[in-house]
Image (tube, each protein chain N blue to C red):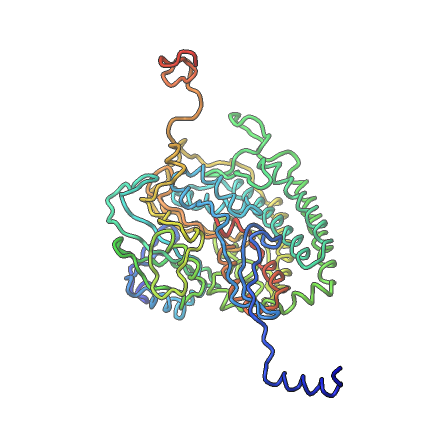
Amino acid sequence: MAEAVGGVAEITFDTVKIKVPAERWVEIHRQARDDLGLVFFSWLSAVDWTVDVAVGDPPSGEVVDHFEMLTTVADLTEGKRVTFTADLSKDDPVIASLVEVYAGANWHEREAAEMFGIRFEGHPDLTHLYLVDSFIGNPLRKSYPLLSREVKPWPGTVDVEGMPGSAADPTEPSEENPEA
Amino acid sequence: MIADQDLVRHLSETSVSVSLETPDMTLNIGPQHPSTHGVLRLVARVDGERAYDVHPVIGYMHRGYEKLSEVRTYPQITTLVNRIDWVSGYANEVPFIVAAEKLMQLEVPERAQYIRLILTEMARISSHLVFMASYPLELGAATPLFFALRERERVLDLLESVTGGRFHPNFNRIGGVKPAYGSGSQTRKVVQDLPAGFFSETRDAVGHVLGVADEIESLVAGNEIILARTKGIGILPVEVAASYGVSGPNLRASGVAFDLRKVESYLPYDRFDFEIPVGENGDSWDRWWVRLAEIRQSVRIIQQAIDGIPSGPLQAKVPKVIKVPKGETYVRAENPKGEMGYYLVSDGGQGPYRLKIRSASFSNLSILPWILEGVLVPDIIAIMGSLDFVLGDVDR
């Protein structure tokens, strides 16, 4: 199947993943729909590969900063499904819109656009989907902090009282305020 | 006083030059409307009695689970995901847990898989019964609600007796299921895994469900008004449905016999005998009918699963601190609302590097601008209700 569309295939845990060049994104999806019978549009999203993380752990290995675009399309007979992927540069993340091929890509692309800051060329209406119109930033980028974590770190110090006698025991009177 | 003849002449002269024009009106439905099952706003341009350019505004319930799961551990995420589609909370957990197990290459004990399967089907019954209750209500028939919710409560009580929660069970563990609520000390070697009498009560309950399915059918299928308002209304062709990613009962109502329970292996459905109910015309009526038929099939599956449930452990051996090895996978499941899937990217840590949540209602709702184009204003509710979405499942 990978040869048919001209990509590199990898099977990871029952998931067929085909890496394709970003320039041929639309063409390959059209081929998948028309020639391979993958008519069902399941989802589209992206992964932010970077070491510049504000939340969670950075990747363990070395990574090149990039966005990994992902779509999954499927058939409606045997249960075949393929995940297509393409790499986008962080400097100018832009890819052609799939709306012409799969109408359902519309909302998924709007979501990816607001969450990652990816531009979809040819999309009819690339406005915010979930976020309010005035929202600034791309929340699903790894560099975007999680505000609740900024206020209270987690998993950090356990928010229960320490054991009696331990240094973290808040019930022991502190030196500055012996009355407390 | 103008003579009649003069009046007629006057009218005929004026009306030839001016054609009747109705100004377009913008109609807002929601954000709070009983038929939206959450907080959804529709903005439509109304020309006379017809709606055009329907524009759904979503995001009122966006909780950012994809971002949150990047800072949570795998066991903690179970709590998040069963809040996605709260009407069938249990079913949301399964594909996520299966994805993590797949990356860890864990073999889940058969008994645990059967318990998962039974509870998933019970979640499907309860979700479809909510639809059986709310959809006729939206069309003005209040009676089915009482029948459907009464039996749903019986099913939810059983779910609660096993998991401890009616809506948010948080019952699945990576590698199995947790010993049931009230089943005694978890450190003892032999734990009673399901509450006493669960199987006989479940048999009893699904028997009642079959009975109420017949009652609802006679109440609704013989209702002239409902028939008139749903037959031929909101027809969704297969090609359009597939291209928008509409899945589940909505897709099958359009005539495709495609059910992920038959083609994916997230739970041992291949051991059971059940049919895929399929609609003929893809209209609102078929979407109602398919769900009713699915309730009956779920009952069949539950009865067979209870007969065939093996004994054995509930939990595979897992380390105390769960770390999922590096890898990526997509696991999708046939949830009551449609295809629910998780694309899990793990980097070997205690939580995912990225978790993409593919929820059924999101894609099912994205059909609205297409399916509501040019329909009569009262049909908006009839069509929207037939798609059976939950806004928590849309907004995630």
